[in-house]
Image (cartoon, rainbow over all chains, first blue to last red; front, side):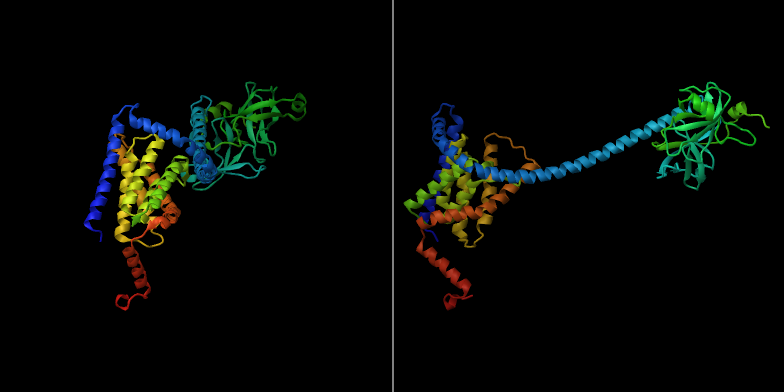
Length: 296
Length: 192
């Protein structure tokens, strides 16, 4: 146990040190930059500067080593953080692009529905593509609407750009659409403005090249528009109403036209890239009546 | 603890070393987000092995050197480090800790106390603190880092100061008796 004298001495020294610190602080804080304490500080800095410089140089390798280690850990963390951020931003970008693409397609569908060429009297049902045929030779897509939504077999299917196919099979909640590029497809068509008729048939494995075959009555020029003819011939009734755009004549070789009665056309609809379609139902009576062909 | 002239000289040397090292780049070393601060560790080491008054004196000296070297307000660091040195010294005098890992809690407490004291003095001098989670996290990491660093620093202080310290014979006897009681080899009446 310390005696009273020791305790008093300890308290006195402590009090003295604290008082000295407070005095230094007060005087330093209050004096001008040219004051004596500031002068002492400047002098001390001048004296200590070479020592600090030497120590700093001696410590540099240690600092660099620790800094390098820290930077490595930080870089790893940052790398991980940036990867996570990149993944999130990629997801957001993909989502936004998908939304924009969907919007563009839906706008196209809405525009087409309001077009004067759109078959009057037909109801349209918008559906989303949920699956695509993985094979190049059998072109079909599945859509998310079925009999419960009013979809029936053989109904025409369009996008905002033009005809894409017809419903070939249907369940209560989904339907399969056979595209006009499928090898089984054939669409009776008409060349505008000349009125020559033919049948649009696919070229196996080609999504961007169709044939207008069996051309009757007329000359066909490159750039001419091909639409569905909507034939209601009693023996060969077309499944498609009249006036739906199919494509544009891309190549009309006179020799081919003469020998085989066929020209090449490019479909308006991008048959490899579409996410929304409209299934048409009902009868376009006015148009059909207008082009009804006489019976045999 | 009785301080000899040699011990005083060694304390002064350690104080100078700590201040110079701290301003020469040790303070810039960042490990896992925390900053190394030798100053409170050295003051705490001196205080733990030499007592409260040498601790307070070492705190005053290191603080003064630090303020001189860094061009800060003279007396500000001294005031805080006197408190750190005196507090750790009194803890050592009252509890007489002999555990090998005592440096860890003492180093952590000294670092935390120093950081808090500096903040309080800065506030009193008109610096408005802007506390944030990042700042608190950095302080916590620095305290942990300094606690680990306290092991070698305290060992260094003990090695430098030990030979120059004249230990109170009564205290030395008390410590020996306590060790013997713990081992069961002390006087029969004092065996645990």
